[in-house]
Image 1 (cartoon, rainbow, N blue to C red):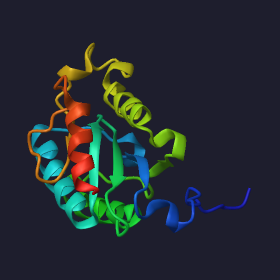
Image 2 (cartoon, rainbow, N blue to C red):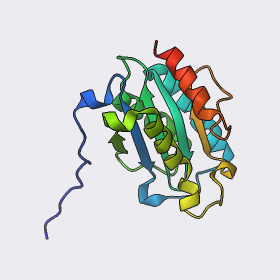
Image 3 (tube, helix red, strand yellow):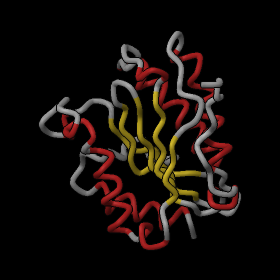
Image 4 (tube, rainbow, N blue to C red):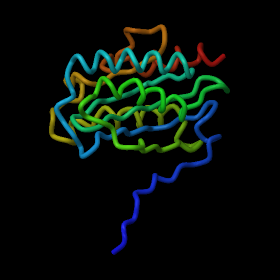
Length: 178
């Protein structure tokens, strides 16, 4: 059988990732590498995520870092938001932090359709993300997993473990998108 080079995953056209798009992203380590997930990495991840969200006008109501991948839910906050550029920026700045491990060449994405963008649907997507460590058998309660969070510029104490997380997130989101 002749050599067949790997192809990239199919992407939607660029406009689907721009503006007020809502996208669930999965970034996987090459060969499902482990050993990189530490409290120090989580700290650096949050720092770079903050810069990414600020630079590309995004909010991240939910993320989880797993031993061999991570999930992010990003919402574009303005017409100038560009999640493909944001993903490129995030990956570029995390690459040296992950070394010697590396990411697979392309992140997987799921652009949320209109019906998936309702508040209850966004909340469900966020909880799906948070429940990953439970489904993987890493913990019995997602709230005990150290590597979860949210990132909204200007709100460092927004914590998905808090009972009022989603109420607070939607109040903040309404103010930032006016």
